[in-house]
Every structure is written in structure tokens, then in C-alpha cells.
Amino acid sequence: MAHIHILYENADWLAPLAETFDARNLPWRGWDMADGAFDISAPPPDGVFFSRMSASAHTRDHRFSTDLTAGVLTWLERHGRYVVNGVRALDLELSKARQYAALEAAGIRTPRTLIVLGRHRLLKAARQAFGDGPFILKPNRGGKGLGVQLFNTMNGFQAYLESPLYDEPVDGIHLLQEYVKAPEPFITRCEFIGGKFLYAVRVDTSAGFELCPADACAIGDAFCPVGEEAVRPKFEIIPDIDASQKAAYERMLAENGVEVAGIEFIVGADGQARTYDINTNTNYNTEAEARAGISGRATLADFLGGALRRLYPALAAE
Image (cartoon, rainbow, N blue to C red; front, side, top):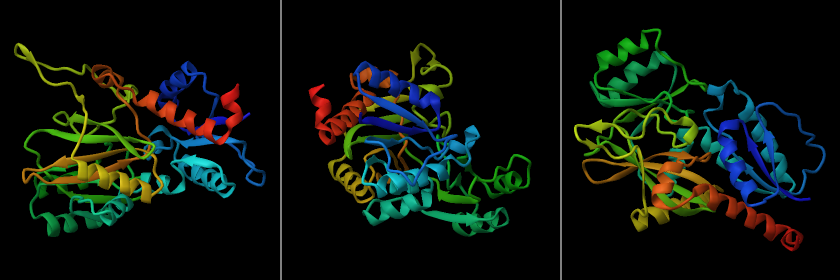
């Protein structure tokens, strides 16, 4: 029997999808890529395959699961299986530098960015590019906003580099990036399923850059009382974005074989949007969705279930 096969390494992020698939009586199986063995000399099973591999896998002690997943995805694609977010999508997930190249090729503006290999090169490169600041330091392979830091002065940056707090990226590559100061402290994350825009989320960044929308990543209350009023929730769904920007994103995703993604951008004081992240292992915030009356998980389940029935019509008769 054909199934929806989900390649994953974080059980916390799999559980909400499993609940939705079960509620729809969809036949599915999970492939744990944190620890597995696969006979790539044999043909894969029938079904639709959805990769949930994350760039942040190493933070859960799954350092080599990305390499295993790349091999498995190549095997699936070689046998002509329908893979949602295959090898090309994984390649983008694991490198922001390659994301920016894909975005720029599609005519989408990104922040000025330097890629730097070597801790000893960071200070000079930052000084030459950004003077005394401000600028952002981030890992080339990150996830959830981990390791993203704002430095306002070069002295502060030097102190960090010389301190025990310095954290080397898993691939050794840092990004030095211009700091885009928005008139208000928020960024926008756009969700796509089947390569098409679903909705956008306004994300409050006043508390920092760890912006994973998954319920499992939530820390503290979504509301912070200020006097007699409360600020906006951290995640707030907005129905649409600029039409030309949306079309450019959809075109870029199609050109790179990405069907499920979250894309983040920020609008600076100059009114220009700069796109800085493509997340091909997207999660959804159920509180924000409940307020808006929409469900990313349900839409994803319907998309994958529809693909399974289309490719294996016998299932529709069952």
C-alpha cells in the first residue's frame, strides 16, 4: 500500500503533523533520519515522500542526519518517486549563502552579506564592510534564529570573538550582514504549500531573533502586559503581501524545486523589503492560526493526501 512517508529528525515537530494526518485517515509513515539504515540497492516503497530535515538538526545532537537525508533523497529521486522538498530544497536549507544566490537570481533583494571562513578573519572583514557597526553575525547553517546576534560596535564584536561565548558554526562559515533597522520591531514570514502562497505572519522581534513559530519552540506567554494594555502577540497572521513580491517568491521556489517553505523578509526605513531566510522545514503556530481561522497543517495534509490519491488512484476507491 502506498503511504505518505515523512523524513524527519525532530519528533516534537512530527507530532502535530501526525495528529492531523491521523484525523484525516491518511496512510503515513515516519522515517527517523536521526538513526537509520536504508538499502539503496533496492527500489524504494511506493508513496509520496516529504522531507522535514532541518538546518538546526545538529543542535539536537543529530549532526549527521542531514548527510543521511541527502543520500536517501537522491535514492528516492533516482527511482522517480514524488519527493516534496528534495535534494535541491535540502541544499538551500543547509546554506544561507546558497539561499541568497537563489533569491538574487530570481530578482529578489537580499541584505548585503559577507561569507567568512575562519574566526580570525571576522573582525577585519566586519570593519572593512560596516565600519564601527551596526551589523549582524549569523551562522551559514542555522535554524530557529539560533546564533543570530546584533553588534552595535566593533569593540563589542571584538570582545565577543575573544571570549568563551564565541560559538563556531557547524560548517565553520559565518555570515556578516548589514543590519536593516525597521521602523517597527517585526519581520514578515510567508508560508507556501504546493509552491503557492498560503498566508504571511507578522513576527515581533523585540525580544530577539529566535523566531521559530512551532508550538514546541514557544517560551513564555505570547502576550506581555504593558500598563493597562497588552502588546500584539508574537505571531500574528496577515492575509496577503505585495502581489509582485509574492509572484517572485513563487517563481523562485518553482525554479529550485521547493514546494513547502517559509520565507522571511524585513522592510527597512527606506520602505524596501529585503529577504534573508528560506526555511524548507517550516512549522506553524496554532494560536496565531486559530485567531485567523486557518491551518497550515490541514492545508499541508490535504496537499500531500491529494498528491497520494492522484499518483495512486486505487487509494481513492478505498
